[in-house]
Image (cartoon, rainbow, N blue to C red; front, side, top):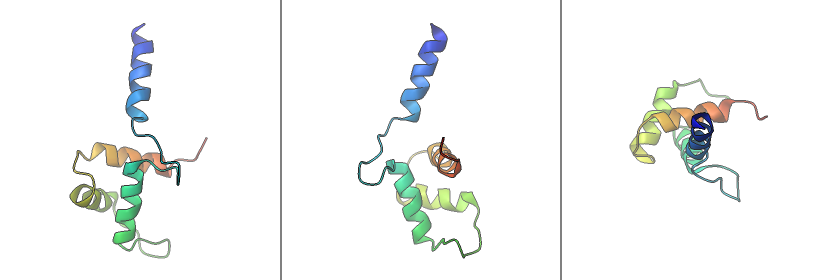
Length: 81
């Protein structure tokens, strides 16, 4: 029973914000991409540390803790299954 409740709680936490129908992105993912665009990050540019991106997102678009932003960045980088 407790493992079922934990599984349910984690699924609610992970999928709290529903993806938008237009582009399939959650709000935090959209904020990350917008911040990266603001920083001028492109595929042909030198890399930057993830802390720089997270700081930009937290400072301008997502005034909560940094953990959801790091979590969203990791999920965006993983292969789709």
